[in-house]
Length: 275
Image 1 (cartoon, rainbow, N blue to C red):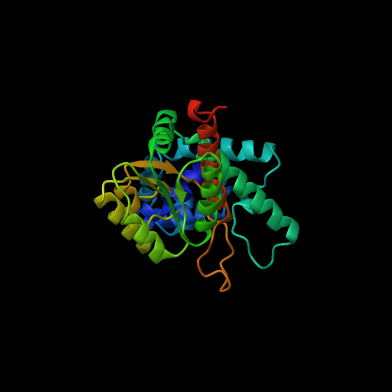
Image 2: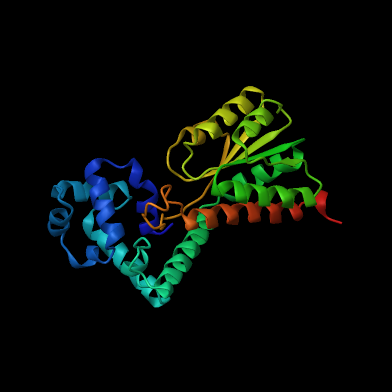
């Protein structure tokens, strides 16, 4: 995972001071290489000790090591034609269509790369085995995630697997109540805090079903409930406008789609589904 992506994914779990630092770096990633730790602290309006603690939280010995790593990361991004300072920012009303296209391409590509790099192969194999051996597979997703869940359901049906995907929240909860020990419930939920998803997961788990979550790496109630997890890593890039109150992330959608496509390809390669 790149440093910028890691900062974005742990931001909500940080202390208030660390969140100020994270916000500044995400908005202006190039600022790190041009400032001392004291100057960065002044820019973020935090104490200098907070800078040290922030870098150590990310696994660095101190600010100099963090600064060098950021510099190398930005150099790599520039080498492939990305302007980190421009592309890390959220889409806004002043962006041209070309800039919007560049931002979307950059963030969706990053999401796919970061998500696939974070995969533990044995964990993935265990999840594939659960799908293969399940009597029924309930796919749970709300909002935009429901679209990915429905697409995944259609693909599983082509393999002769009993996949169920309903967009209505009450139907999802009712289906969860019918699951048993031979079934699995797979969630596509970026933040892991959706109340209807949690109710469905609790009901299914109480019935003995195995819970799988394709969700962000942030600590969440859904992650605690799930026995198996695949992380979706994406920096939020949606426009912060009143027309998009949920700040939907195209990047998180790309991360979810990548994981469901990967699971489908792994299932097609399984001996049970070979002609």
